[in-house]
Amino acid sequence: MQFDIITIFPNFFDNFLNEAILSRALKRGVIKINIHNLRKWASDRHQTVDDKPFGGGVGMVLKIEPIYKAVKRIKSKITNRKSKIILFSPRGKKFDQKMAKRFSKLNQLIIICGRYEGVDERVAEHLADEVISTGDYVLSGGEVPAMVVIEAVSRLIPGVVGKKESAEKFDHAQYTRPEVFIPKSKFVNRKSGSWRVPKVLLSGNHKKIAEWRKEHAR
Image (cartoon, rainbow, N blue to C red; front, side):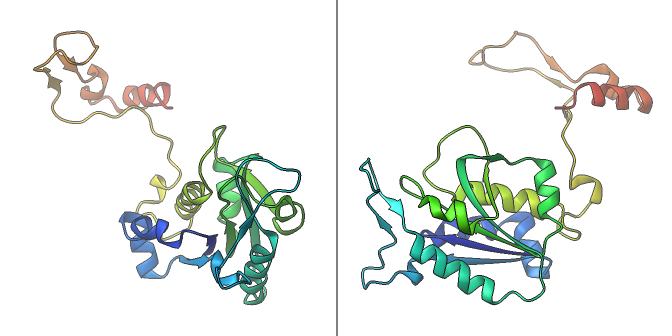
């Protein structure tokens, strides 16, 4: 599985790609992630990739020309591969586990990260295969959503996550030692006294534990 990220902030992903699960998967060659600096495809010496919106408005909009050139260059290297181009927008379809599973069946995902006041709408209309959103909120750009998509999709690719059952697990409530914790301060707005692990988890009754976990799954 290959991810190609188009962004004006290529260094944004440095720590993300050098830690934990993704770092190990990259080293083993299970996945490949290419970061493409959009300014590389700018047509002027100042590497301009944005301009004022037609009709007026606050802020700048990413231009279609450099994005088109970047996508064209990336796509030119694809031969007989299942690939999709995605763009992030608050108006896009909500990203969820079902979509992550569908993306994990591809060979390549090209991710366009917007910035400023947005991206020329012709990118959504003519270049992107899908326009998606990671939630009902506004961010400064598409880099954080790109990380969300990459991690969610990568976890479903065989060999990325150590235990197969962990790849798509939705957590139930979890506890660990000590069995009883007594807070030394009242800075938290909680009931005073000891905080205990639910008795059922200490019972050794696996059937009841499984039922409790199912009931308390998020």
